[in-house]
Image 1 (tube, rainbow, N blue to C red):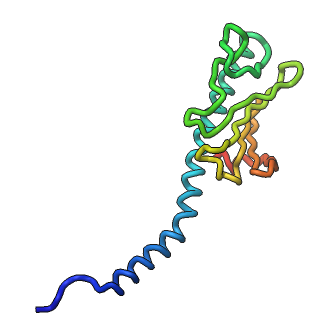
Image 2 (image 1 turned 60 degrees about the vertical axis):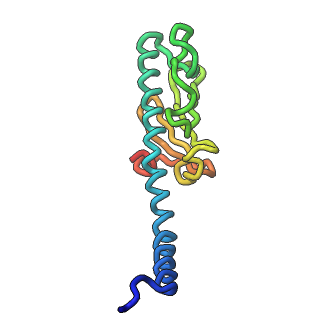
Length: 146
């Protein structure tokens, strides 16, 4: 009767092949996850844009106080995205007629390693921009907004 099973050498070769395939696939998988999780920032920025337009309709000026209640002139929104991976802020012009909403990936969030798209922004005209980890802004909306 012939013994059944695997030899130690066969098992080691199989484990080495699996290790090599994992090492090749893992960076691509992480990039796909980071790209998918950018939806968190995009949804938060679109929520800010909606709240700003409602505020402008009523008061004829935009606001930069995210967490303040609407009754006190704020937007009544959180200063972090739903999953907590992005810090949210609004930069306002002096006359209150222009704003830029920004979502920035922060440590120790899941998106802290997203060096290509560290910040996303949208303004009152709907212009969508993104910045890398070095702070270099790009006007190409396909870069990080898709």
